[in-house]
Structure formats: C-alpha cells, structure tokens
Figure 1 (spheres, rainbow, N blue to C red):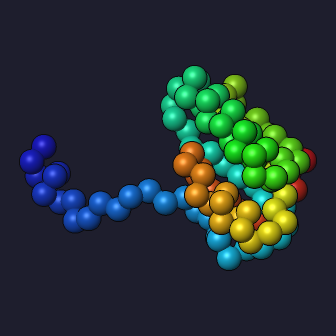
Figure 2 (figure 1 turned 60 degrees about the vertical axis):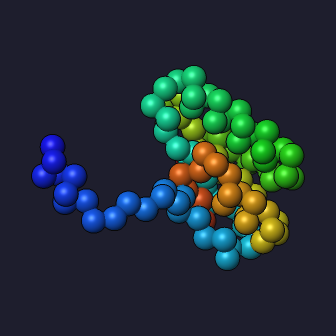
Length: 100
C-alpha cells in the first residue's frame, strides 16, 4: 500500500557478513538461500569451483536441508579472505567453530 511505501526511509544493498581483516584460519561459510533447489545447487557448484580456482581448501561440507549447505574452509592468506568476501552468493563467513 501507499502508506507502507512512504514508511521506507532507506534501502541499502545486501552485504554479506564477512570480516576481510581476518587472515588465517578455518571459517564457516554460508551461502545465500535462493529459495529454489536448482539455484541453490548452482550456487553450491559455483562456490566449489571458486574455491578450487583460488586455492581455498574446503575441509567439510555440512548439509542443512536437501539443497542448503554450509562449508568449513581453510584460509591461508588475507588476499584469499578478501576474494572470498567478494563471492557473489555469500551470506556469511565466520570464524570456524567445530560442528560435530
């Protein structure tokens, strides 16, 4: 409705939760949920390809649902973290906390 539109003050582009200042370690990576199986599978495949091309080691994949995954990745250099933070389908990168 017109009243709801008038209440919007500002729209900001989405930016993934990612600390580009981190340099080394193991991080948990979550991808965006595109709400379709096909798009989520494509995002997963693109992420795996991106990591392979950039020398980022995927240590583990964790399944949330039939088509949503989270990844534990190892970062060795700040430059790799900066590249990771620019991956288009990224939701978040957080310091890795082991999940059993």
